[in-house]
Length: 234
Image (tube, rainbow, N blue to C red):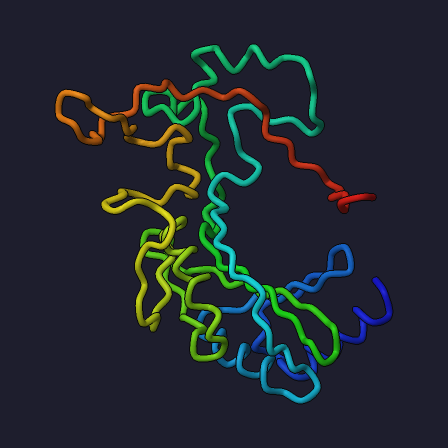
Protein backbone atom coordinates (compact mmCIF):
# COMPACT_ATOMS: atom_id res chain seq x y z
CA UNK A 1 0.00 0.00 0.00
CA UNK A 2 1.38 3.39 -0.97
CA UNK A 3 1.81 6.12 1.62
CA UNK A 4 -0.83 8.31 -0.07
CA UNK A 5 -3.43 5.52 0.03
CA UNK A 6 -2.57 4.74 3.63
CA UNK A 7 -3.06 8.41 4.56
CA UNK A 8 -6.39 8.55 2.73
CA UNK A 9 -7.60 5.38 4.44
CA UNK A 10 -6.70 6.79 7.85
CA UNK A 11 -8.40 10.08 7.01
CA UNK A 12 -11.59 8.36 5.85
CA UNK A 13 -11.76 6.22 8.97
CA UNK A 14 -11.18 9.23 11.22
CA UNK A 15 -13.88 11.32 9.54
CA UNK A 16 -16.51 8.64 8.86
CA UNK A 17 -15.85 6.43 11.88
CA UNK A 18 -18.49 3.77 12.58
CA UNK A 19 -20.50 4.78 9.53
CA UNK A 20 -18.10 2.56 7.55
CA UNK A 21 -19.20 -1.09 7.73
CA UNK A 22 -15.91 -2.36 6.27
CA UNK A 23 -12.88 -1.08 4.39
CA UNK A 24 -10.54 -2.88 2.00
CA UNK A 25 -7.50 -1.86 -0.04
CA UNK A 26 -6.54 -3.73 -3.19
CA UNK A 27 -4.15 -2.58 -5.93
CA UNK A 28 -3.85 0.78 -4.15
CA UNK A 29 -7.61 1.35 -4.42
CA UNK A 30 -9.82 1.90 -1.38
CA UNK A 31 -13.29 0.39 -1.16
CA UNK A 32 -15.65 1.38 1.63
CA UNK A 33 -18.65 -0.80 2.39
CA UNK A 34 -21.58 1.32 3.54
CA UNK A 35 -24.93 0.17 4.92
CA UNK A 36 -28.00 1.57 3.11
CA UNK A 37 -29.05 3.46 6.25
CA UNK A 38 -25.72 5.31 6.27
CA UNK A 39 -25.28 5.81 2.53
CA UNK A 40 -26.67 9.33 2.16
CA UNK A 41 -24.88 10.62 5.26
CA UNK A 42 -21.57 9.18 4.09
CA UNK A 43 -22.00 10.51 0.56
CA UNK A 44 -22.76 14.03 1.77
CA UNK A 45 -19.71 13.95 4.02
CA UNK A 46 -17.46 12.70 1.23
CA UNK A 47 -18.68 15.48 -1.05
CA UNK A 48 -18.81 18.39 1.38
CA UNK A 49 -16.01 17.79 3.89
CA UNK A 50 -13.19 20.22 3.11
CA UNK A 51 -10.48 17.58 3.57
CA UNK A 52 -12.20 15.08 1.25
CA UNK A 53 -14.10 17.03 -1.45
CA UNK A 54 -15.23 14.06 -3.55
CA UNK A 55 -17.35 16.32 -5.72
CA UNK A 56 -17.43 14.14 -8.83
CA UNK A 57 -19.45 10.93 -9.14
CA UNK A 58 -17.81 9.08 -12.02
CA UNK A 59 -20.13 6.06 -12.21
CA UNK A 60 -22.58 3.79 -10.41
CA UNK A 61 -22.41 0.09 -11.24
CA UNK A 62 -24.88 -2.60 -10.29
CA UNK A 63 -23.48 -5.99 -9.24
CA UNK A 64 -25.14 -9.39 -8.89
CA UNK A 65 -23.05 -11.68 -6.65
CA UNK A 66 -25.46 -14.63 -6.79
CA UNK A 67 -23.13 -16.86 -8.83
CA UNK A 68 -19.77 -15.32 -8.01
CA UNK A 69 -17.29 -18.21 -7.95
CA UNK A 70 -20.03 -20.72 -8.77
CA UNK A 71 -20.50 -22.03 -12.30
CA UNK A 72 -21.04 -25.32 -14.11
CA UNK A 73 -17.67 -24.83 -15.79
CA UNK A 74 -15.02 -23.01 -13.80
CA UNK A 75 -11.24 -22.90 -14.05
CA UNK A 76 -8.45 -21.08 -12.25
CA UNK A 77 -6.60 -20.44 -15.49
CA UNK A 78 -7.79 -19.86 -19.04
CA UNK A 79 -7.21 -22.77 -21.43
CA UNK A 80 -7.48 -23.40 -25.12
CA UNK A 81 -8.55 -27.00 -24.64
CA UNK A 82 -11.72 -28.68 -23.47
CA UNK A 83 -14.17 -26.24 -25.03
CA UNK A 84 -16.16 -29.14 -26.55
CA UNK A 85 -17.66 -29.58 -23.12
CA UNK A 86 -19.84 -26.59 -23.96
CA UNK A 87 -21.95 -28.69 -26.35
CA UNK A 88 -22.72 -31.44 -23.83
CA UNK A 89 -26.14 -31.64 -22.24
CA UNK A 90 -24.73 -31.54 -18.73
CA UNK A 91 -23.16 -28.15 -19.37
CA UNK A 92 -26.26 -26.37 -20.65
CA UNK A 93 -26.39 -23.07 -18.80
CA UNK A 94 -29.35 -22.18 -16.61
CA UNK A 95 -31.77 -24.81 -17.89
CA UNK A 96 -34.56 -25.50 -15.44
CA UNK A 97 -34.25 -29.27 -15.62
CA UNK A 98 -30.50 -29.14 -15.01
CA UNK A 99 -30.50 -26.62 -12.17
CA UNK A 100 -30.29 -29.14 -9.33
CA UNK A 101 -27.29 -30.91 -10.86
CA UNK A 102 -25.36 -27.77 -11.75
CA UNK A 103 -26.07 -25.47 -8.85
CA UNK A 104 -23.97 -25.24 -5.72
CA UNK A 105 -25.72 -24.15 -2.55
CA UNK A 106 -24.83 -20.60 -1.58
CA UNK A 107 -23.93 -19.67 1.98
CA UNK A 108 -26.93 -18.28 3.83
CA UNK A 109 -25.13 -15.01 4.51
CA UNK A 110 -24.37 -14.30 0.85
CA UNK A 111 -25.69 -10.91 -0.23
CA UNK A 112 -26.77 -10.72 -3.83
CA UNK A 113 -27.22 -7.17 -5.15
CA UNK A 114 -24.99 -4.17 -4.58
CA UNK A 115 -24.45 -0.72 -6.03
CA UNK A 116 -20.85 0.41 -6.45
CA UNK A 117 -20.01 4.13 -6.56
CA UNK A 118 -16.77 5.54 -8.01
CA UNK A 119 -15.84 8.97 -6.68
CA UNK A 120 -13.14 11.48 -7.62
CA UNK A 121 -11.86 14.49 -5.72
CA UNK A 122 -10.73 16.95 -8.36
CA UNK A 123 -9.01 19.26 -5.89
CA UNK A 124 -6.89 16.49 -4.33
CA UNK A 125 -6.79 14.07 -7.29
CA UNK A 126 -7.83 11.13 -5.11
CA UNK A 127 -10.35 8.36 -5.73
CA UNK A 128 -12.49 6.16 -3.53
CA UNK A 129 -15.03 3.43 -4.17
CA UNK A 130 -18.21 2.80 -2.17
CA UNK A 131 -20.17 -0.46 -2.13
CA UNK A 132 -23.69 -0.65 -0.74
CA UNK A 133 -25.52 -3.99 -0.54
CA UNK A 134 -29.30 -4.13 -0.82
CA UNK A 135 -30.64 -5.89 2.30
CA UNK A 136 -33.36 -7.83 0.42
CA UNK A 137 -32.49 -9.72 -2.75
CA UNK A 138 -36.15 -10.28 -3.68
CA UNK A 139 -36.77 -6.52 -3.70
CA UNK A 140 -33.34 -4.81 -3.75
CA UNK A 141 -33.75 -1.23 -2.55
CA UNK A 142 -30.95 1.31 -2.07
CA UNK A 143 -31.34 5.06 -1.40
CA UNK A 144 -30.91 7.34 -4.40
CA UNK A 145 -27.95 9.74 -4.22
CA UNK A 146 -29.33 12.20 -6.78
CA UNK A 147 -29.64 14.78 -4.00
CA UNK A 148 -25.87 14.54 -3.49
CA UNK A 149 -24.68 14.18 -7.09
CA UNK A 150 -27.13 15.08 -9.86
CA UNK A 151 -25.16 12.91 -12.31
CA UNK A 152 -26.49 9.84 -10.48
CA UNK A 153 -29.76 10.16 -12.40
CA UNK A 154 -28.89 8.10 -15.50
CA UNK A 155 -26.45 5.85 -13.63
CA UNK A 156 -29.19 4.74 -11.25
CA UNK A 157 -31.63 4.24 -14.12
CA UNK A 158 -29.06 2.01 -15.84
CA UNK A 159 -28.53 -0.12 -12.71
CA UNK A 160 -32.31 -0.38 -12.31
CA UNK A 161 -32.79 -1.40 -15.93
CA UNK A 162 -30.02 -4.01 -16.04
CA UNK A 163 -30.11 -5.38 -12.47
CA UNK A 164 -33.53 -4.44 -11.10
CA UNK A 165 -32.07 -2.44 -8.21
CA UNK A 166 -34.62 0.11 -6.98
CA UNK A 167 -33.19 3.49 -5.95
CA UNK A 168 -35.59 4.93 -3.42
CA UNK A 169 -36.17 8.65 -3.95
CA UNK A 170 -35.25 8.68 -7.65
CA UNK A 171 -37.59 11.13 -9.42
CA UNK A 172 -37.88 9.20 -12.70
CA UNK A 173 -36.81 5.57 -12.24
CA UNK A 174 -37.56 3.91 -15.57
CA UNK A 175 -35.66 1.83 -18.10
CA UNK A 176 -32.98 3.54 -20.13
CA UNK A 177 -31.31 0.85 -22.32
CA UNK A 178 -33.76 -1.99 -22.98
CA UNK A 179 -36.69 -1.96 -25.38
CA UNK A 180 -40.26 -0.93 -24.58
CA UNK A 181 -42.07 -3.73 -22.78
CA UNK A 182 -38.85 -5.61 -21.99
CA UNK A 183 -39.40 -8.22 -19.28
CA UNK A 184 -36.70 -8.98 -16.74
CA UNK A 185 -33.27 -7.49 -16.04
CA UNK A 186 -30.61 -8.74 -18.49
CA UNK A 187 -27.52 -8.40 -16.27
CA UNK A 188 -28.92 -10.60 -13.50
CA UNK A 189 -27.08 -13.91 -13.30
CA UNK A 190 -30.29 -15.92 -13.63
CA UNK A 191 -31.28 -14.15 -16.87
CA UNK A 192 -30.65 -16.49 -19.86
CA UNK A 193 -27.72 -15.40 -22.03
CA UNK A 194 -29.79 -15.88 -25.17
CA UNK A 195 -32.70 -13.88 -23.73
CA UNK A 196 -36.36 -14.85 -23.60
CA UNK A 197 -37.62 -13.48 -26.92
CA UNK A 198 -36.26 -12.91 -30.41
CA UNK A 199 -37.30 -10.33 -32.97
CA UNK A 200 -37.82 -10.74 -36.70
CA UNK A 201 -39.62 -8.96 -39.50
CA UNK A 202 -42.74 -10.79 -40.67
CA UNK A 203 -43.25 -10.03 -44.37
CA UNK A 204 -46.83 -11.30 -44.31
CA UNK A 205 -47.82 -9.13 -41.34
CA UNK A 206 -45.51 -6.35 -42.54
CA UNK A 207 -44.28 -5.62 -39.07
CA UNK A 208 -41.74 -6.72 -36.50
CA UNK A 209 -42.90 -9.66 -34.39
CA UNK A 210 -41.65 -11.02 -31.07
CA UNK A 211 -41.33 -14.78 -30.58
CA UNK A 212 -39.91 -17.12 -27.93
CA UNK A 213 -36.17 -17.47 -28.40
CA UNK A 214 -35.18 -20.48 -30.48
CA UNK A 215 -31.50 -20.59 -29.44
CA UNK A 216 -30.62 -23.40 -27.05
CA UNK A 217 -28.39 -21.97 -24.28
CA UNK A 218 -25.07 -23.67 -23.62
CA UNK A 219 -21.73 -22.86 -22.05
CA UNK A 220 -19.02 -22.21 -24.64
CA UNK A 221 -16.24 -20.73 -22.54
CA UNK A 222 -15.20 -21.31 -18.93
CA UNK A 223 -15.50 -18.74 -16.21
CA UNK A 224 -12.01 -17.74 -15.04
CA UNK A 225 -11.45 -16.04 -11.68
CA UNK A 226 -7.85 -14.96 -11.27
CA UNK A 227 -6.32 -14.23 -7.90
CA UNK A 228 -4.24 -11.45 -9.40
CA UNK A 229 -5.87 -8.77 -11.52
CA UNK A 230 -3.47 -7.48 -14.14
CA UNK A 231 -3.65 -3.83 -15.04
CA UNK A 232 -4.02 -2.92 -18.69
CA UNK A 233 -0.64 -2.57 -20.31
CA UNK A 234 1.19 -4.26 -17.44
